[in-house]
Length: 250
Image (cartoon, rainbow, N blue to C red; front, side, top):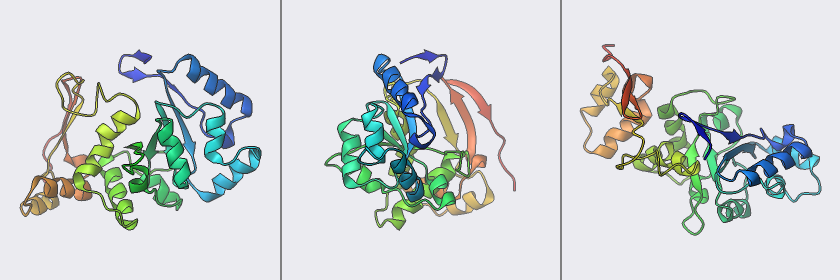
């Protein structure tokens, strides 16, 4: 994978509605020439954009088929949103070993719909799924806030997830989506040691609730529902301390 320091190069056709056929063709060709590059594009977030894009490419079966046609969906492709996917759409993403970036705060802010996480992770044809803040329309840089909203959307879909599953979306799930699980996303020996230290007692409210916690999972659930940037006590990049915060008194 092409890297410069901690940066990874990425092919980014923003979305089919803002790209010409020539641009999409060039993106696909670049991906075939450099298969280790990641490729990301926005797809099927809301129904109006789905209808608009499909009107631009009437010869294609649906929104996803446009990306498939131009060779954009493959391993190390990250498809943003995928809210309005059919079962066959999820199956197609699985077959091509591509990934999905679930961006809950954007979906909620725009009223786009609810991503069906359990359907995407169906054990018969599971898809790599990570979390995205999507600050184009998302409402927070905080992954704790983003996890919080993903947890709520899963519950609204009558397919709740555990606190551990929610945390995995923001860590190992994202690493697997990018094809970087051999480097980041977990605390295994040999990884790059990019680590965030969270304090479950960072604020008075967190401390009050944590005092009643009966398990590690409950503590984690408290962090992802009540925590924010104040809960980040320290950040390590490649094993070196990059940031440390003082305890919050109020």
